[in-house]
Image 1 (cartoon, helix red, strand yellow):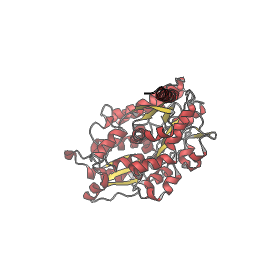
Image 2 (image 1 turned 45 degrees about the horizontal axis):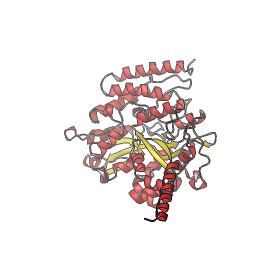
Image 3 (image 1 turned 120 degrees about the horizontal axis):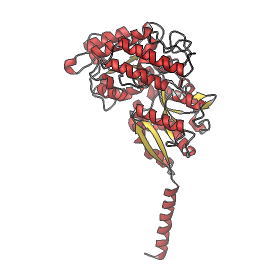
Image 4 (image 1 turned 30 degrees about the horizontal axis):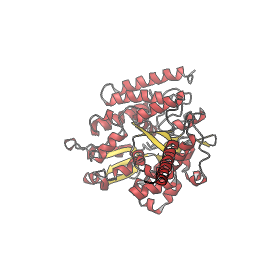
Length: 435
């Protein structure tokens, strides 16, 4: 080897070392949902476009993620550069000055393409504080073959009475076939997301106009008793431990006749991991004829805490993960049915995506949820399946634990409601909402 060759090799190695040394590592905290896991498998595309940025992932179960990122941002810990947070946290944390504005995303990002309902929930005083990775409402996913065998037809807009009738007809516990699967795992974003949305359709509300809790009212009693009746008679065993991921697995295994949950699940119940992929139908979330359906509005979104020391690199990642090119990337690798839904108008105008069987139902469900008027009776708060106040995270989890205990048979519905009423009243008085 000549001296010149050695010199050239040395220069090349030095350049590689220099490039490696300059690479900036950002830490992304995310939830262990299927779409987020899929994104991690597509990181070669990001690395090709941003060789100077490395990404370290922290992937957590939903309740653990919320606890970790809330603690980190409230203390200014700076542990994460990109947070996966939801429509509940964004406006509260944005107002607190805890999040970096994303108004300076590149023009190619086309922020005006974001669905108005989703973008509005992530904007405070004109500042977009998070970019939606996927948006969702909730809907009924059901087994068409089991409905047909029972001699029933699922209405496009069912009532809760329709749901109970179908659940009874499809249940055969000797075959581990359960008429309905619903969230039972305690947590404000787990069982209480479902139950709060359900309660809206029953005419219930968390608080009256003076912030007095309403769990002692007949509408909440009717909600909880209906839920417990469905789950105890037609649901799977151990349902108090089941959240989104557990029910998704049960449905994919053919053990659920119906599942009322996030619209984003549609691609997974009809995907390659589902044993019933070709047998799934979709309907709007149920109502009781009171003008409100039992569906929610949510976006899992990516945001940057002000404590991050790597904000420009974090913005580059968010731009990549939530722009139109990413949707096209997923479509090219996994098909249009697996594209993250519910964020962009252009997606629903795409003729290829229009062929996806759940596309229209997802959009109709998102558009039917109104966070500014979530309940039948007037309320002093916004939010469909949550109350947009800082205290709700703790309140929702407390009530969720009581209702999960009722599902597990550890207390009666009446006792769970009475304890919820007392606990929420005490907290609202301590927080100064009730004088």
